[in-house]
Amino acid sequence: MTIVQFVLLASALFSIGLYGVITRKNAVLVLASVELMLAAVNINLVAFDVYLQDVLHAGQIFSLFIIALAAAEVGIGIAIVLMIYRNRQSADPDDLRLMRG
Amino acid sequence: MTISLSDWFRESANWVFLIIALPTLFASWKTVTSQNIVRAVLYLVVALGGIAALFLMLGAEFVGWTVVLVYIGAVIILFLIGIMITRAPLGRAGVLSHDTNVTRPAALLSVVLFALIAWGAVDAFSNDGIVPFEPTATSDLGNLIFTRFVIPFEVVSIVLLAALIGGISLARRDDAVGDQAPKKSGVRG
Image (tube, each protein chain N blue to C red):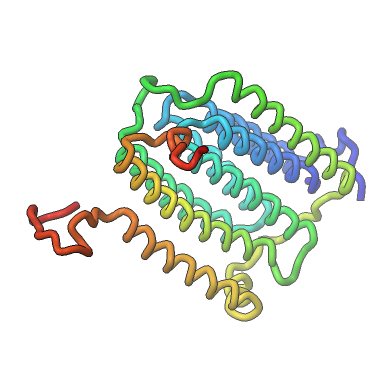
């Protein structure tokens, strides 16, 4: 196993997630694409943790932190989408043009 | 140490990597392109399952099973609840992606980003191998979290508490709370 194969996979997943964030029209699916990007970052952290043979396991521990923060982010994100849907009957981020000049 | 391409294919772990990585890539691609919203989220399950399998392959057992528990167990359920509550068009009814004058620049941007990272990674690490590594003991991770990384751990705890309170206060219906309006209906959802 080489480190490059994991970095390539992670960057491919990150790019796919970025594509989803830009092109999706539903806020829940935008959040799902963000999850994909965070998971790609986790692959990098764990792969480099193993590659560097870090005695502190900083990569694995910070990937655990990212997982916890991603769960919190999804909870808040879904709550905000729910509020927006209640007020505007739409889950499309492009409909939120109230602050456009 | 450097590894040639024929040596790379001779190692059985790399075949396992390919068997895991290719379905993961396919599932993540379907996650961002599928026009069926439930199916897109269920493809995300496959992608995250593949990522968890990669973590197990790297010896990061605790992180791998945490991905299974937190992402596949909890976050996917949150997504499905969000889809149900916002009454997103199930099946093939609605349009879930932008048309080509958004997707083409987005695809170009993604490909350029991937090419940049790939070029940087190949340039920096060329063929550096990962030495086969015994699985990380969960007790080591626990000891480190509660000694060296205790302050980030506490900060994450406070963030989770704030997210809990924020989620509850955002999602509850408080149209009759905070002013003198009398409650007209008894039970509120």
